[in-house]
Amino acid sequence: MQEHNINQLYSNTIGMTFQWKRSNLTNYKKINLIFNNTGLHLTTKELEEFLCYVQKALAASSWCKEYDGKDSKSILLETPFQQLSFAMSYKDLESMKDLIKGTLFQLGLDKFIKDTL
Image (cartoon, rainbow, N blue to C red):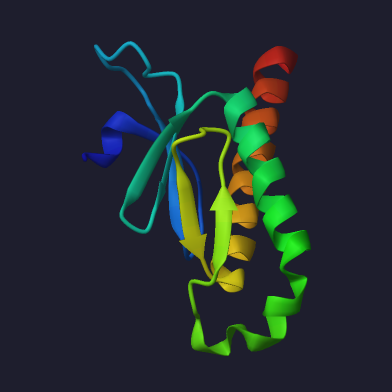
């Protein structure tokens, strides 16, 4: 992937998000969320929904926070897509939440700037 072909939105320790600048792909405007060895191509609405699933998983497993020192992949993260779920550590879930929130913030900021100028 060549960096000049993408518009990076946000990155942290678990992954990054970007949009293609130009492409023949029909979904080039979707947000590409890359973490570990996985890539998801989501609309903004799907990304917001995914954030809700991450927050629910964090809330339901807050007891894991103290026992996650071994970085165990003990928490099941359901997704808006019925056929897809992930096993993640509490630390990774927190990083995923940050990645999604940072991306949504950047998208909102970009829209604000575009609308203002």
